Length: 445
Figure 1 (cartoon, one colour):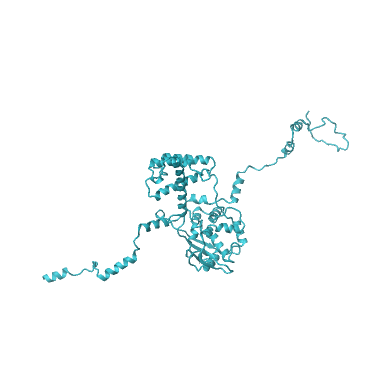
Figure 2: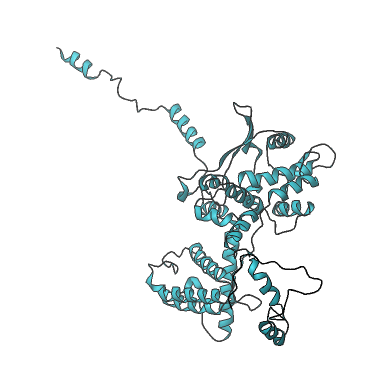
């Protein structure tokens, strides 16, 4: 082989190797592709805004309430020539000592003491406040942090002392809507499809009951695209609901293996029961099957809704307005629909796992707190535990009548009176009396 042949073989291109050379035009295309692929550079303000946008408003409200309570206590003590620093500036020893005093001395604005749970929630709010201030080396609720062991003992003792005095023994909860109440709402005309308001009332209530929506947070961000109407092989229609984020599902790092709600509710139509899927279908059609699920109803006899979404205050008081129009009495809130769902499923003997799939609860303990025993079950339990029923005995009839006396003299007279007022009387020749006949009798004297 000549030298030229060796060089040619050595320089022979290998098709298996990639070509890393990029011309000017190709390089420009790649830069443009990267610009389209990635977003704009994120600043510190953008990152903070993202974090704050995913915080729960109620949690933020409770944190602010807890911090204000501590700041008012600190302000009052500093007026008494005490030098109590801000919570975020305290070292562990000072924080432990101040929190011990705080849980004992804190009061409501009216001067009354907080219930045990409220006191605990204040402490939780203070801990969240420290986390917001990027202080992560102090956790006074962690049992492994021995620096705050005395504080936890004081908090535990104070909560027990408050409970022993009956503080927080009763909690105000939303009442479930029974089947009788539900029927009354239908009969009152608050539910129906004759007008836009009645139809919206209907779908709101059954969103709470069928799909376990709570409060107003799930309703506020609800979209028409989350609902679809279908039919299975047996010609039974169903409503398919696909949930998004909620209080029990935020989709963060701690819930990688948790899924959002995916519920299919079947609606068989019978002569005694309406098909709720038809109401949803009519409502979604009026909204154009797009955009916000709750929009302001338009006046008129036809089913029409505007483009403006229903306000937050309206959503918060939806259930109270529905029950008030129907004339129901009780403490009804938006939680009543979800509580009704859990209660009725529990009464029907549905397994807890299936109840949790509807309500969205993550643990059996949580769903047990949410469901209520129906009045029928409470009556059955009471009947089992009640005292035994009285059974009248023939021999006690005279005794019961004789015991109805008002004075000791009458009682003594009854005890000393002989049942035979005239002993040893000849009864053989009594006037106006039928003769007595005795056969095969034995008399002992």
